[in-house]
Length: 116
Image 1 (cartoon, rainbow, N blue to C red):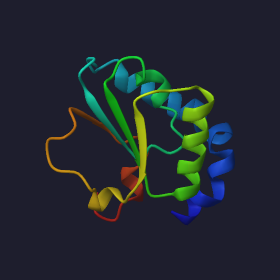
Image 2: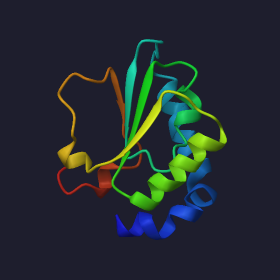
Image 3: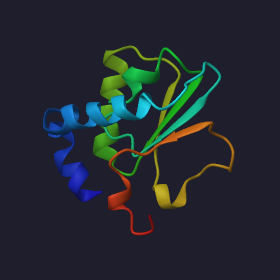
């Protein structure tokens, strides 16, 4: 969390190209439908949101880093994205019941988890 809090303001400049390539590769193998409810676990600054917002009923962006979530809030507000809700939580102790989401994304996250 500390590392992402420290780099939150420069995260997109540093990693957006890499993250975009991962997102585009993942989306080639998925069918996304309007009724899908999506969790982006480890959403970071919200790069994935731009790819999904017009296609879904609900997107929950979750991240452990408060400062990264503040960047995601700016991302959502500046682009006037709808149906996106952000929460601060630890992916090892998610505050959701099983089966709530039809799709879960977790890009560049598992290596940071002690219990992946």
